[in-house]
Length: 138
Image (cartoon, rainbow, N blue to C red; front, side):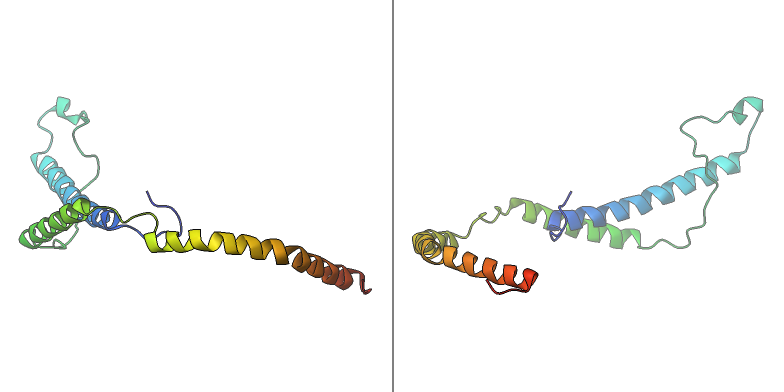
């Protein structure tokens, strides 16, 4: 899936939308099948046995469909087209070339600055912290 703190990708969003549409379509199909099975009723005692392909839930009134079938098909077609285009686009480079070049140029300067200044900075901060904790100047 996706890692925490990361924005969902276009593929994640499209998959989520398609899943919602498919779930509703599947739920409506299951309730229609249950209504059909209940309307037939048991003909004899052998039909009282529940088969695995028969739904066990009673019909649920879902009200009118969320989307017209034509609208859902049009949306599904558009999402499929967008998904195909998004899948064909090459992924962006992991590192910006200009940023990488600047990093490489700055590394020697940063290394030198840290070697010159870091020990003194750490020493000063340690002295201040010791003074703060003990209440005595060091």
